[in-house]
Image 1 (cartoon, rainbow, N blue to C red):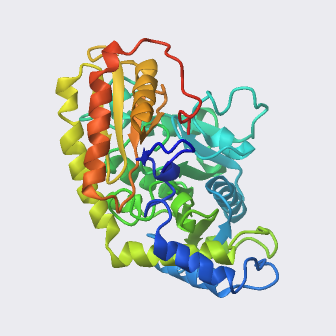
Image 2: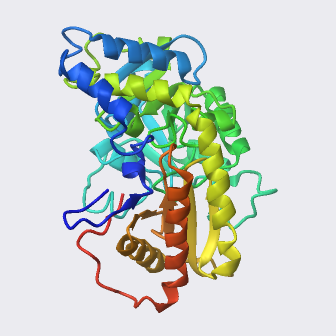
Amino acid sequence: MWDEEGRRFLDLTSGLGVLHLGHCHPLVEEAMAGQIREAVHVCSHLMLSRPSLELACRLNAIVPVAGPCRTFFCNSGAEAVENAIKIARYATGRRGVLAFHGAYHGRTLLCTTLTGRTRPYRKGFGPLATDVFHVPYAYCYRCAWGLPPTGCGFRCLEAMERLFLTECPAEELAAVVFEPVQGEGGVVVPPDEFLVRLQKLCRDNGILLVADEVQTGLGRTGVPFATQHSGVEPDLVVLGKALGGGLPLASVTGRAPIMESVHPGGLGSTFGGNPVACAAGLRLLHLLWDEDLHTRAREIEMRLLSRARPWHEAFPCVGEVRGRGAMVGIELVKQRETREPAPAEAQRVVRRCFEKGLILLWGGLHRNVIRLLPPLNIPWEELEMGLDLLEESLKELDSTPPGGVRSRNSPSEG
C-alpha cells in the first residue's frame, strides 16, 4: 500500500486477517465487477440471488460438521457469533454461554461480553449481557495454574467442570464458544488434546460446540478449517473476515436440525448474503482450493518460524514464538525467567516497523504479542523483506526511547 506522500507499506496483517489473497486481487475484483453489472443488492427475505445460494451450498459441503448442514449469512463476524448464540439457545432451550479468558469475538454487546479481556473491549460498556461465563483457555506459556504443558491434566477443563458446580449447571449451558487459535488474544495455540477433551465434555452434557473461525478459517492455519488440526467437529462454525474477499460478509454454518430448529423469521439480515460479496466469496474459495493455498500456508509457517525462532536466543525480550500456518505470534517479555509481559516494548517494535514501511499488529492478553498475518499468496521475497524489517526493529528495541511519540498513521489496536 502507499500513503498520500508516496511512502510504500508492506501489510503483514492482511487487512486484519481479511485479505487472504492480498489487496486488490484481480480475479476477485473481476467477480465483484461482474456481479455489480447484474445486481448489487437482493434482500434474501424477498428473493435469493444465485451467488448467495451457490456460496451457501459450497459452505454446507466443506465445513467440518457431521451430517447435512445449513448456512445463514450476515455482515460481520460479531453478527455471526450473535446469531450462533441465538441458534444455540433456541435449539437447546438453554440460556448459558461459556467463553474463554483471552477470547475475542467482536464488539457488539453480547460479543463484548463473550470477549475475555477487559481493556479495551469491556471497560466502561456495562451492564453487559447476562448468562455468559468465562474460564481459562489452554494458554500453556501463561498457564493460569503455573503448570507445565505436559502432565497438567488440562486443569483448564477442570475449571469448566467446577463452573458447573458453582455458577451454571451443565444442563443450563447452551453453548461453548471458542477460537481454535486465539488470534487477537495473542496467537494462542492450544494442544489438540485440549480441544478433543473440550468436545467430549460438551457432548457428554448436551452442550453445543461453536467454533469461531472468523480469523482462523479458510486456510489461514494450514488446513481449510483450524478445528481440523485436532479432528474436532463443532456443531456450528462461524466465518467472517476473509469470506467476502474484502467485502462485509459472514456466516453461520451448522448441523441442519440445529439450524432449522429456529422458527421462520427468527433469523434475518437486510444485507446478509449480499450478491456482490457472495460472488467475491465464491471466487475466493475457488482460488483458495484450486491453488491449494492452505498447503502454502503451511510453508509460510515453516518460513516464519525458521526465521523467528532463532530470535528467542538472539533477543532476551523474545519469550516465545508460536503459531500455525500464516498466523504467528511473538511474545515479548521483560525477563524470560519471570515472563513479565512487555507491552510497551511490543508497541515500540510495531511502531518502529511502521516507520520502516511494515504494518504489523500487537495483541495478547497483556498487549505484548507481535502478530503476523501475511496473505496466503505473499511472494517469498516480500515475506523475507518484512521479516528483515522486523528483525531490524527488534535489534533496535533497546535504543528506542520509551514513550516515544506515536505516528498519527501508526496502526491501532485490533
